Image 1 (tube, rainbow, N blue to C red):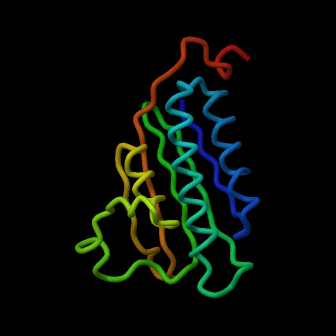
Image 2 (image 1 turned 90 degrees about the vertical axis):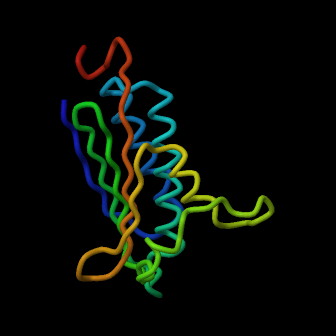
Image 3 (image 1 turned 135 degrees about the vertical axis):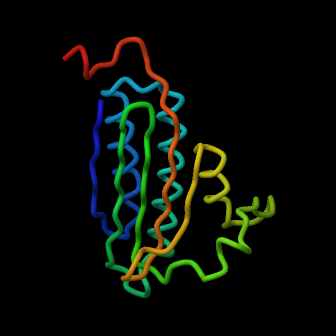
Length: 149
């Protein structure tokens, strides 16, 4: 089974639960194990929150894009924004390390890394902005709703 969808969302806090609910509903309907769905929905929420907070290049009304692919045994999620992007040395020097326990910010990327099987953070080609993509191997329930409809 292969399912994909893409949303263009305003950089507003209200967009985060919308994306999360759509992902959970899609995975539930497809018959994905609830633990896997939960992990991916938390990771998606963190990536969306980063796009809302950091992804606008000074324009608060700028949109960001969320795309989810459920294909075979894997789910891949991409969150792309229009912010300044990551610096040129990010991949070499910025290992995603846990934030200090008392820090108010900086835990999102670490959480995504813990919940997903593979994470990539890079710049959008051409126009600027950041793309956070992550994937996870799926497990299935015995009775997928999509197949019994």
